[in-house]
Every structure is written in structure tokens, then in C-alpha cells.
Image (cartoon, helix red, strand yellow):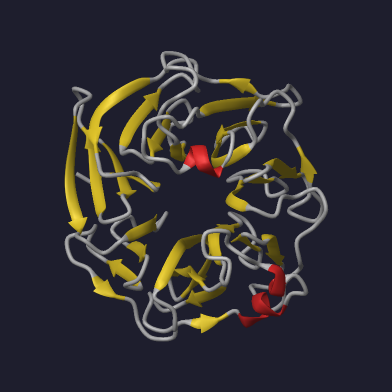
Length: 337
């Protein structure tokens, strides 16, 4: 049974796909302004959720009960959270939380205590970071962690760029030429440690050397405000993004997002991956997810709360019966029962 956890902007919803392809939903964390969710890759009952103004929550029983994370994070807005697939201390994978204003925190004791990776705020570009709707501040929109190197961290600042640490967050490298400043989503690859992918409000960029250098890769796209990204877990040359014309189109509620899902194979240009969908889409895909155990399946969750599924790497899509207030982010696990 496939299980997804959706951050809806309000709650965490557990979505379960049964064998007859029907979906059931269960709301797990109610009315907390949930913005992001992360599931431990090794302990699937361990879940973290970040909220807009209520801080960070954790569950150790698959979402049945939730508690506020421990002390050390002074900010209540948590737009990003990630659980490391490679850094483990005393049998627990490290947890990272990104905040508004832009700071990054790490916990090695299951969220009981948190350490401030303060070097992030000391980068030369930091005074210029500014989120357009709230220009007096910015936030860590995305955290990407290496599957192989526990010391390698990427923080995507909205609006500021992609920042890299190669020493576990002690020191940081500033944004680099070829990457974009309005970072929305960053992906690393489970099998190829050299690959890093950026979706941004300006285009798409890739690094082939673990973030040392970057190159824009936008050929074939006719819209360049890019929000979500997903990468084939086996083939690092196959990846997907969602895009529209501008922030005004991406974040509107009137059903006129003019969005596209694009697919890129190797050195070929981006191509639409819209089989069975209206083109362009009226709903903006905020979340794209490819399960590591099912590379042919792609989930697309929209700002408007719909869930679409492709089982052939984007050649065709089906709209499910899921109807949520919104889907800002998706996380995946396999049910143990």
C-alpha cells in the first residue's frame, strides 16, 4: 500500500492508496498552518512537520500523536524540514529545520535540542536576501541533503540562492554563477553524489560536481517560473519540473495557473510531460514526487489540492479522487501493514 503525507497549508493529511486504486485520507495534525513535512527514510513512523507560525512538530508513531519539537529554534515559521539519509548519531538520522528569517538548525537527538548553523547568516550575500511578498525578511525554502556524504548540505534561500556547506554546516559557500537566486526546490540524487538540481523562479539549473559549479538548463521550456522538481531515483539524467510564467500565475487561486510539467532526458531539451492533462494546467503543481522504490510513478500535488498520478514516467496522467485544501509538499513511505 502506497502512503503519502501531504502538507496542506493547514494540516498534515495521510493519503493511502488501496489495491483498487481508491484513496483514503486521514488528517493527522489539525489547524497548525503546516507548510512542510519530512519522513525518516529508515524509520517511517518518525515524521516532522513545519508550520507557518506554530513552530516545528514531530511524531514518532506515524502521525497518531504529535508534540512540539524541543528547544533551540527561536523562530516560529518553519518553511522547510529534512531528515538526513546519511548523517546518523546514536542510531538516529539527523533532522534539519529551515526558518523565516533565514536560519538553519540541526538536531542529532530526535528534536530534543537544536544547534544553530549560524555560518549561513554570515555569507556575503545575506544582507541582500529578500522575499518579495515580505521584503524585510527571507526564508530557507528548501533543504537538500546528500545520500552519501553526511557533511554536504544545500540550503535554498527564497530569495537569495543556493548555499552549500561541505563540513556539516560549520561553514558555508555563497551562491555561485550558473545557479538561480530565487531557489524553490533542490534535489540531490540517491545514487549519483555528483548531481544537484535546482528549480527556481527564473529557470532550472544543474550541478554535475556536487554543487561546486552550476549551469542553467532551460532549453525547451516556454515558461520559467519553476517551482517543484523530482528526479528518477535510478537514472540521474531523467528529471521533471513544474513551471508557469510568473509568481502571479503560480500562486493564484482562480484556476488559471497556466502551468506545465516538463521532462528532461539526458542532454535533450525539456519536453512537456502532459499526457492526459489539460495543457496548460489550470492548477499549479506545487509538489512532484517519485518514490525511490517505484521509479515509474510520479505524484503531482497542486496548490488547489488535487493529486495526479503517472505510472509511465509522465507519458500519461490520471487525476485521483483526492481533494484537499491544498498540497504544498508531499513525502512518501510504505505502510508496514
